[in-house]
Image (cartoon, rainbow, N blue to C red; front, side):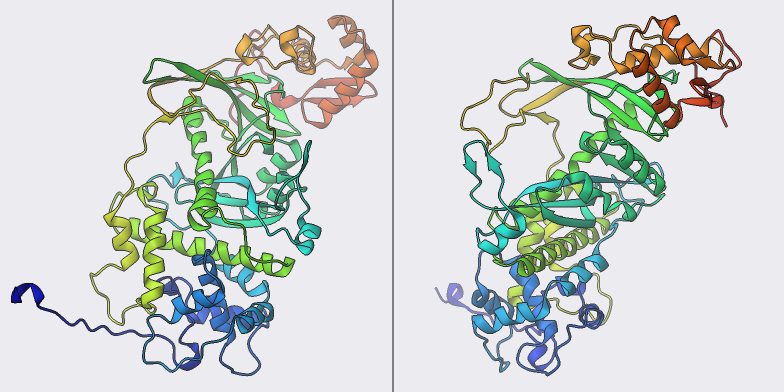
Length: 559
C-alpha cells in the first residue's frame, strides 16, 4: 500500500577535527579522552610528529585506542571504522604498513602517560557502594590469564609457564591492578612476566593509596613487610591472613576479635566461620581470618567487616570485563615487547574511559548503584558511536538530552545481584587428571537462602582451638610457635613489670629447646611484643600492661 511504502530522510551534523586530524576520534569516548589531553601527552612524551603528513601522532593515539575497542579486526578494518561516518571528506586511506609504522613511531610512552592521567577514583563519595564510612574501598589483585603471541621476542620477555607434562601454549602476562571496588575503575596498574610474584607488583602500586582509602586484599598479600608498607601510606587495611599464621593474642575484645602485632604493626584479628544454606538444603562454608587496622570494635563490629571483605571480589569482575568482555578471550595482537606494552596501556586506557562514562550515567540518577551498570551495553554503544562519529565534541550549549552511552546503560540495567554460590573450578586445569573434590560447595550455581557469620573468640590462655580454626599442623597435636608465644605472653602478664630471663621462662613453661626460645624472644622483641632490657632479659611491652591484673586480656585503655 502507498502508506507502507512512504520514506523519510534523516539529516545529521557531525563535528570532528579538521583535515588530516578528522580520523582521530573515539566517538563519545572522545569527551573523556579529549584532543587537548592527547596533544599535551604527546608533547610531554616528545612523540609529536615532526612533519604534518597523512597520519599525525594524535590520530595514531586514537587509532591505538580503536584497536583495543575492536580487538577482532585488523588494522585496515579498524581504520574503516574510524572513517565510516566521515563521508564527504577527502581522506587518504593508509596501508597496513603505514599504520604499523605509526605504532612504532609512537611507542608505549604516550599511552602509559594517558592512562596515568585517566586512572583514579571515578565516583563521588556519596555514590552508593563506593565508601565504607569515610573510607573509599579499594582492592589489589592480579590476573595471569592474558595471553601473548607465541613469538621469539615475546617468549624472551615473558617466558612460558612450565607444567609437569610440558610448556604452556602461549606466553602469559601478569596484570596487577588497584581497583575501586564500588565502580571497578582502576587507580593504577602494572604488568610483566608471571615469574614475578603478585606482591612485588603490588608494592609498586602502594604510593597510590591514601588516608582516605580502605584496602581490601587477599591472603597472598599478608606478608609483614607488605602490611607495614601499606599501613605507612595512611590507608586502612582489611586483609585475609593465611590459615597457617597464628598471631599472638595480646588483648581480646567483646565482639570476639583480638589485638595483636605483626611485624611491629598493631592489628585486630577477626576469626569467623561463614556458613550458607542453598536452595537444595545443602550447607557449605569456610573459615576466614581477617586482619585490620580498624581497632575500635564499637565503630567497626566484626560481622560488619566480614561482610565488607566480600567487596574484594569486585576486582575479579573488572578483570572479567577486560579479559572476556572487551578482549573476548583473544590473544593479544602485538608480536614485540614494545608493541605489547603499548597495547596493554591502550587497553587499560580504553577500559578506564568506558568506566568513567558508566559512572557518569549512573550518577545522573539519584541513588543508583554502579553495580547495576552493564559493561557490555556501554561497550556496544561506544562502538556504535565510533562508527557513526557521533558525540565527538560535547554540545556547545547544555541540554537535557543524555549521551548515547548513558541512554544505553540506563535502558538496560543489570538485575539486582542475587546471593549465589558454586564450586570454584579451574576452567583450564594444569593437570589432565581431575583432582579429588575437597570442598562441599555445589558443582552448579545455587541460590543462597540463609547466611550466617559466626565470630569465634580466640582462647586467650593457650587453650586448644576448635577444629575448624586449627591449622593443619595444629590438628596433629604438635605444639606450634603460636602456642609458645601465647603461653609466654600469658606468663609475663602475671608479673608484667618484672624483668624475665629467658632461662626462667623456659623452666616455668617446661621448654626443652632453650636456644630456639631465645631466638623467638629476640624476634618477638623486634615485633614489639616484648621489650628487651638486658642480655637475655625481657619485660612485657608497656602498651599491654593493664592496671587490673585479674583480667590480663581485656581491651587496652583508650589512648
